[in-house]
Length: 459
Ligand code: NAD
Image (cartoon, rainbow, N blue to C red; front, side, top):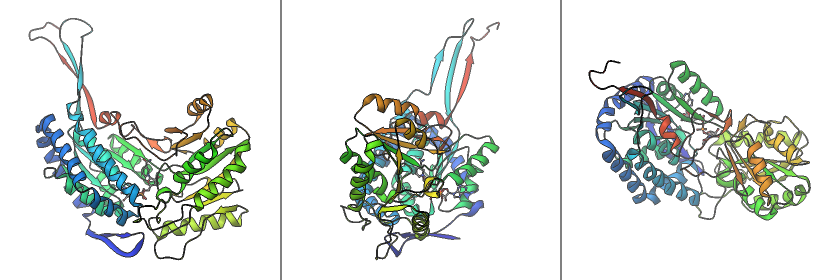
C-alpha cells in the first residue's frame, strides 16, 4: 500500500507518497532496531551525546527548509512553523546532555557489609506513535530522551506528517537501525505497539485507549497523551484586553489544532459582556489565511473531513438556539479554511461542549463565581490545560489547586509548552508517566536493584 500527504492550503499539491511496510514489515523493522541497540549502548554517554548534538546542528542548518515543509505539509502558519523548528533543535540539544546524567544510586545495606546499587537500564526498542499537528517537535520530544538513555527507536508518524518525520530522521543521521521511521496508518501503528518494548503515544483519545489496551495486555510500559477540551476562566478583575488577545491566540492559532487549544471560555460575572465583545473582535481580526504568509495566525484545518465536522457542529449548534458571535463559515477560496468561531447560548450537552473538535471554535459560557467556573471547567474527562485570567494571586493559586488539569496557565494562553518541564493532562487526557523534562528519562528505563556482598561473605 501507499500513503500520501497533501497540502491543506492547496489540496491539489501532493507533498509525499510512499510505500507502507504493513504489519510484517513493521515487525521486521522492530527486529532490526533491536539488533542495533547493543551497538548504540556501546557508543557510551559521550558517543550518544555527540550524536544527539549533531542532530540538533542538522536541524539548525536546515531550519528554513524544515519550516517551509511544515507549512506545506500540515498548514502550520510560518511564524509558528519556524518556532517549532527552533524548539525541535533545542529538544535534541537538551536531551544531548542526558546521557551524562547519573543512571542510578548507591545505598548502604540494611545490615552487614556490601553495596546496594540501583541502576536504570533501557528497555530495548521504543515504539513511538505521533500525531500530525507538531510533525517535527513531537517525534523528537519522544525520540530524543528514548535514545539518550540507550533505547533504539521505531517511529510511526501520522500519515499527514509523513514527509516531516522522514526528513527529521534523515537529518539526524543516526546509525542504521537506531532511528527508523515507518510511514503508515493504523495497521503499522498496531503492529508497532504489538512488537516494541516500550511505547509512547500521542494522538486522539479513541486511538490512545486502543494503544493502552494492547500494551497493558502485553505488560509493557506505555504513556499516552490524548485529546483535550480545554477551558479558560476569565475573572472580572482580569485585564480583559490582554485576556481576549491570549484567548484569540489559543482558539485560532494554528486553526485551533493544538491539544492545548482553548475550546470553552468561562466568563465569571461582569467579565462576560466586555469579554464577549473583545474576544469576538480579536477573532474576527485573525481570519483564516494563507499559512505561508508571515503574518498569518490561523491557517487551514488539516483536511476536508475536519472542515466538514467543524461546519456541521456550528450549524447544529445554531439550529439548537446558539448564537454565532463571529466566524463559523468557510471562506471562498481553495484549501480547508474555516473562519475562527465564537458561539454563545450553546445548549448543555451539545457536542461542542463534550467532544474535542480540534479546530478554531470556542463556546462562551457564563459562571456566577469562581466555584461555578471551576465546576464547569472540571465537568469534562478531557482535562489537559486550563488558563486562568485574573490580577489576584490568591484566586490564581486557588484555581491552580482545584482545577483538574495537567497544566494551569495564569494570564497566558492555554496553548504553550516548555519542553524542559513535565507535560501531560489529567483524567482521560493522559495515561502513564509524564512526557518531557527529566521525568521522562525514568519512563524509558527500568530500575534494577543490584546487591553486592564481599566475596566469601557468610550472608
Ligand atoms: P490520531 O489518533 O488519529 O492518530 C495518532 C497516531 O495514531 C497516528 O500516527 C495514527 O496513524 C496512529 N494510529 C491510528 N490508528 C491506530 C491504531 N489502531 N493503533 C496504533 N496507532 C494508530 O490523531 P491525529 O489526528 O494524528 O492527531 C490529533 C489528535 O492528537 C488530537 O486529538 C489531539 O488532541 C491529540 N494530541 C494530543 C497531544 C497531547 O500531548 N496531549 C499533543 C498533540 C496532539
